Image (cartoon, rainbow, N blue to C red; front, top):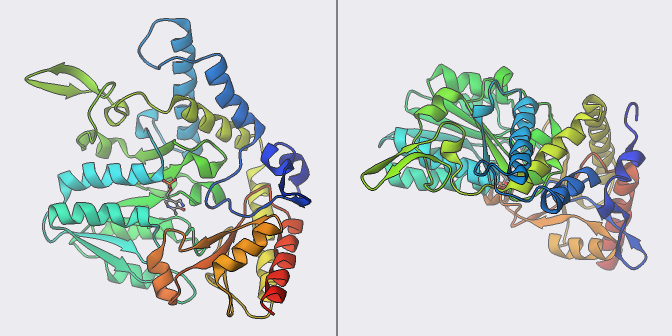
Length: 408
Ligand code: PMP
């Protein structure tokens, strides 16, 4: 696989060096849930607590200055990674979920009226459904859903047909976590803008498996989580265009987000701090910065080519297994192999695979409407990251053959 030495990369992930069970080396195929962390990230987080353990923005002492420089440096790295124009447009949150809730509560609360529509798609993660339902209930707006096809695609026709002058906001995934579908986000954003709607992209999976340029996409909001991008959990990002963020009210009150506080009333800090109340996740943000720095050291084209080759190989091998049906056959797909096994519950398959050292995810993957579409309660899902190999997929296939023989 040209330009990409997967074994050298794997050596940087301590978690990969372990056995899942005695005699069963770990085969990790659950990176869509959370990615393993390279040594560079683990070391960065450790060094925050070992050397630069201080609160940020508040003190003149050297530890606080170092912690602040590293924390704000992480923001700069995120800005560059997303292709954002200004560091003020990068708000740290707890994750993609919190970033969507922030936009729903703040932008939605200020801008939605009875009769307005929020357009999402059928393949959204619960975190890109429920916050919109909550704000719709509060404002009298309505959530409208663009359906998926049986291949798991969102067609431009289905999406565009549900856009109208009533649509005030559209929100959709860049890449589906349960189907692997890559959505035509640039065109969807353009179509949304044509009716005057604001567009939010849930990039929790997209930022990991595609090059993202929020300015080229013209996304109004783009959100993601650090833990899926080889960084720590507890940190995520809301990118928002400055003009939108400027006009939005704060959503949480507390330290750091204020300019002046009196009992008569308070005024707000500048962006991005207006949306960062309280002590932030300092080590986690620095760890995310380290993850991006580590990724920047790789040949991203070669990484994406490696992942595409793995997906094609996995698709071919799984398709050849009798009684296995792939769920999600979009023409543009990334990193997810979800499937059903005839007559075998996904949880049983997952349990037997675990005994073989193969970690996959089973269940609804926080996308119950997708499961409803296919008339199932759950699927088995193997998901890929840059450290996976064809040998991992061979191990999955061997494990699935065991599952099949167990059920006779
Ligand atoms: N959207 C998608 C597409 C996801 O895959 C996930 C995580 N599974 C989320 C949103 C939510 O991310 P988090 O739980 O890290 O906030």
